[in-house]
Image (cartoon, rainbow over all chains, first blue to last red; front, side, top):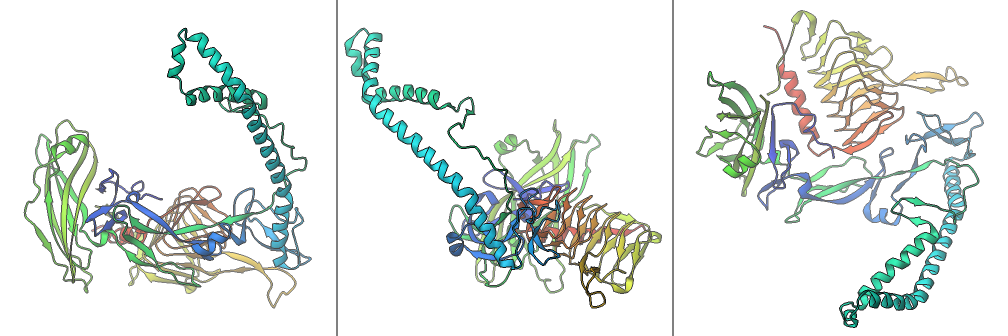
Length: 389
Length: 186
């Protein structure tokens, strides 16, 4: 999945997930039962439906399991993988053409005045071309397997005797045989048998030299049939710990648009941070002041408070110490929803810089969300990355 | 915090609905162009409204050296039933779209909250879905359909990845802040 962290410009405000990964505030999800903000890797996906990327046909998973995962009406160019479009000749024969590399089905001979019979011709061509090869492959595979099994059965008994003889010769004491069990003897026998088989059939896979002399070579040139277009999938998201739904899609038949019935984004339940001015406090340039603005873009009132991180985590991730974090709790009352004016608050964090090259600091936030029927709580770590010295 | 971009008032026209067009851009056929409002057109932008109708949504940002041209197709008309004639198709650009510099666009439809990179070439009769991203230096062959919530890139452009569910929020915030910070020099 695409990450906006790669495109985003400095200064960055990222949220640390429990798994150790960092994401933008808008990309994080929220699990209210676990009271945590989660990244995409801490969620599990469940396929809701399959859809075609060119015609938009939707196949629900129960139907798609019976069919192959490819569109029945769309095809792909075998050369450039672009989606093919319909073509009409001067003789009014239908076919497919690629608008990028100009590949046509006319060269293969798959054209017909009736467009629906073009699909039937392509399906028949696939069956005729690959059926013979598949049968040959199956016969050779079964033949090799039967030979191996027969040889093993016959020579197992003979080689076990040879193995026992060699072991007795290496170990002067006859009592040493009691240390070797039957399973160990079989292992040694298997290794020797495999070496013989690899030599016989030239299947030395360690050196990656596989000689397919037993298979019939393809005498005719490839026909380059159009490839059926693979389907893409839409997914639901669940929290991995509590298995509760975070994102669910609505099932709307005969419609190509997708809508979410349940969506829990971190953005909808937590204050939004933004970096303001950055300036030095001292003449010696050992202390920086960073103004951080907070916006309440949710529909509910929020009570929030800050705490410092442990000294161990600060040393582990090489973060600067913050001097001026505000200690009491604040309340964000979002009264001006109708006028589309968002409240914001700000605080000034003073950093102590000593022998550091990066300006990066972090703090913990715990937010209580006052929803109309219930109260929820979220705890998460915010990581602010301003740049390099 | 997003950087403030200051411009000379003498170099830009500004309308009552908040459209800011630079005087060095080339716009033709204004009768057939319909813009909702709060759009920014930078230098050397070519917008051909004389060929077909162009309808544009709000919060569109078009950077330097972009050409916006309606697409075409071949077909028969009543006037010429035997010979094929070029027909120009209308161009529709939705809200919250960003088009980066030096790209050529001949699509029929561009969905909401999309971003198109630099040096892109979007050929005729392409349809780009919502919340999608087209990477820099990519060429979309004609008649491609970019589905919603997808990332396309390459030459020819190919499906690469899926975008997260929050792309609409990120794109809207980015363009609203860009418009607010695009301020004349005082």
